Image 1 (cartoon, rainbow, N blue to C red):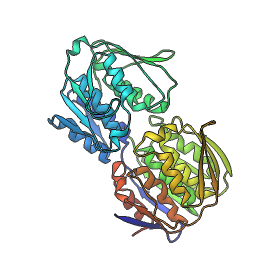
Image 2 (spheres, helix red, strand yellow; image 1 turned 90 degrees about the vertical axis):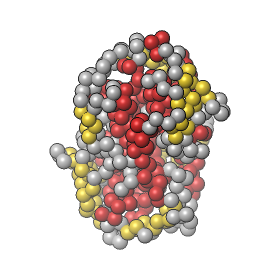
Image 3 (cartoon, helix red, strand yellow; image 1 turned 30 degrees about the vertical axis):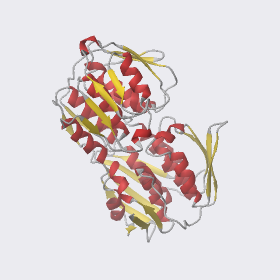
Length: 408
């Protein structure tokens, strides 16, 4: 088992880095490109392992598509293979086979597609069996409070269905910015949509655009905000970081103003500056729309002595790992209680951070590794399986070295 020791000798950061293109944007663009006959030019594609694996699977002619641990690819490819009338089995690693897919399968079946479970009902692997796609329906129902990826998978294939799609939501939407990202990208490709009271409608249409430039990944940028907050001094230039809301995690820049980290944008990217050491000692945050930021803030608040109350992170339990349980265990090594009250559905950080006596486990979860790495500014910290960052940010450790961190 590999372990890295992360530390920083000066706690002063002045650096220029280029984070990967957005994995979320890249994977959506790749599916749309494949649906439109590979006629698009996609610039700044993510270097993330998930995206590179999706490229391979879209080009492969094998009967079985193994997405490994990529939840996005599992959901997107299931819908894509159905819409393109391919005979495929979509599978993944051990954790992927424990993550539910029934809401997507149910909706595809409502549209007339033949999707079958290979093993356990409601979970991958699934088999996609070709049908006469001209007979596909155009109305489906889906839960909105489990995963936005189910909804996006359906929205991406909607304009390519013979009669388009009206997707009805049976519950409140979570991670809505990711759905809005999908709809925004479709608009850039010439596909319009209409919101109803509890539905969205997309008519049959054709892709009109010929190029798409992927923006820098705001989820990856979040770790640099944590670094800026925990450093004594910080000025971090992130190439390609855009001041727009196509990615919901753009909210990070606004939230961090209260913690003394300001962002300036220019044509080349964004500059993160630590302008003050003053910050709230207590804060409530709702991550319903931005669940990928929860781990960043949990560790940052623990390190900064902020009493945090989090809501809207129930979906973290079905991610790459049970992220709530993982945070509770690893923050416990730092003398921090990460408590959950089922009655009120909130999570609280309590305690004073201590030097960890054991390595931080990552649970095969890239965000666990990157969320805990900024603690190297407080003192040396050991992190297991550092290679997990390849899932979304392969150059993470190299960028830390560029910023003056010692990675041994």
